[in-house]
Image (cartoon, rainbow over all chains, first blue to last red; front, side):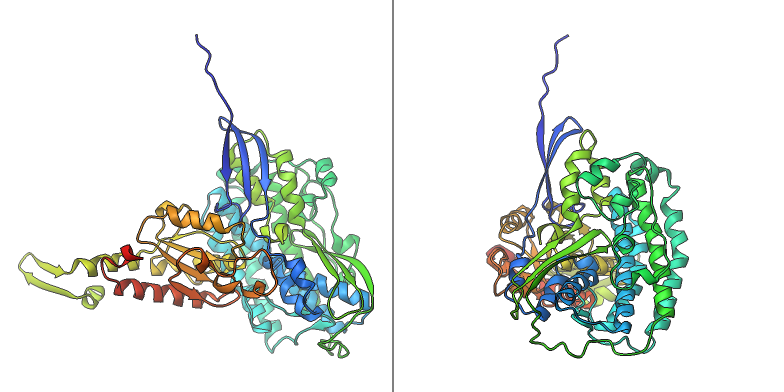
Length: 368
Length: 170
């Protein structure tokens, strides 16, 4: 029998592809249906935000930070404000700290609900998308009544928050959380025991613990690989050390664990919000000394927080002027894109999509 | 029969059925306006609002709009999000791959003139109308779902008014 001559070929996935979550381009070298090599090409959403911020005053930088990571804008605003406050050694009123925690955790829930829907849609189930987005709207309503925007908030400012929560926020927040808690069983019932879902995710795309640590993976992806590391607990910022919450960990490191861990995190975030609402003190929400022409003293800091994707850091250098000298943002998604080639080879394209989706990569955080 | 009343239609009934007479233009435009399938082309923040509009609360489907993943099946590019200089040739290519008649909606400040990156960003394209012709501009950063739907309704009205050979001259 004559031997068949085979050769490898190249498939371009993206930049316009519905399951690359924006504009990531993956150059795949294929051997039949198996992926031999993956080469991520980034930079299709490079908007030069870091450079633009060098031309803005500190208070003007915050709307720019919103656009670094738009799914959890609050955390981006917060990390920049925190870095500036650390340089200026500024006091923040206690009520503002509680409000910040409430907003950060609400935003984490919104982000994970989006993850739930979009991941299921990538893998092929449309219904969870409609479910996840339905409950996400409840949280977006809360943000809208607080700061008037649905996505890019500009709410957390240097020295506090822009304004106090309106009347009826607390009650509405509690009822929204109650609805989400009820619907959690729906989410789990739709997918957790669904045989198609289990076949697509269980044992697929296993990210080993050592590899994850070596490449600086953080957030839920690291915790799904069996490392109990959360900056809210390991390097507490704001007032997270006052709250009682667990850090969920899973040990297999496959797509299913990465998915289920985020659902667990939603429950923990809800616990934090309930505690913060209960203990919300009265008082100011903004440090009155901060003017629009605010100048922190010269200095530099690296500040990091845990957002819904992992470690979000800002390296801020101030020369004592009105504008920052340099702002470097460190997004968790950057590390998650670079680790993709190391554990996604020798699998099918359909599994790569599952892998990419459960890593929860968002491109503006990569390209900035 | 609500839709038929709005069209320039002459209908005549006789036992066992009837005859409807209308112009080809009106029938085609009605079909085009009521089934705008859009290309899923979300690049940045606006894509999240586009997804919200497509999801449960706002329900884009009732305007006859369903997303398509490939430009070959799409009538409309809903350009949601910043277009950088690296992405611009891809946008042009996607537009060229679509079958005519094709329409473009520029959603959000970035696609209109660069939005918050207008003054000092070296890598953002200052408006997608440098690359492809745009039918409707929707301002906002990002626009609310309501305004996106308003924009789509305006596009539908625009389509209904067009003459049969208009798009060839474009």
